[in-house]
Length: 256
Image (tube, rainbow, N blue to C red; front, side):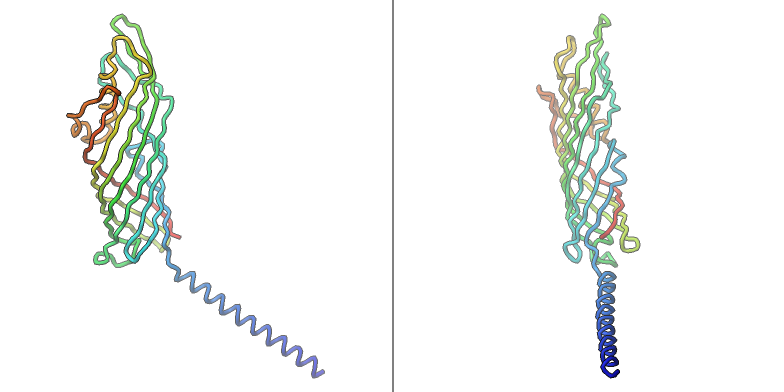
């Protein structure tokens, strides 16, 4: 009887011991989860559709210091197809193929003197670089003086390289959700426009056509056509120049 009693007592002690161990680890795990620093943020750009079409742009921010982070962006975007040519007897129609993408990065310095919280919450300054590429195929129709229509495929390619700095503020709600607002982002931008017809059209000057197409594309950006009015299109239908640019966006994100 005594043997049975001792055995039961040992079993109870073992159960109590392991229950205590489990309780300690559970408490530690819960505490670790509550105090774990959330260094990663995944974001979706909400405002890229203001200038571009069929847009899906993402961002990933990683805190790499007390007041610093690296933010990487990328995604798909198309250039608007609704452009009109300032060229007599010429029309654009039937966009057959459109594509585009962008990628870039900014290195953020969260201002400790201005912010109550640590990164990635608060006011930040950041140098940035972004690259955009767009391409499309359209049908160009020219009507000559006899009323005869000639058509050709028009291919356009656009590249933007932006180098600049930005001022922004990132809000954090409930530790997990963020709203990231780039409120001021001036840049020095290299623009490259190319317009090419697939074959000659009688009576239509190819260089003049390329210039009219590029001017219509530039008109989609505020003041860009005026800022680049002194630049010429070369014999290959290409116009390149450096000019001012600007970056702004609002994104929503989730921290993990």
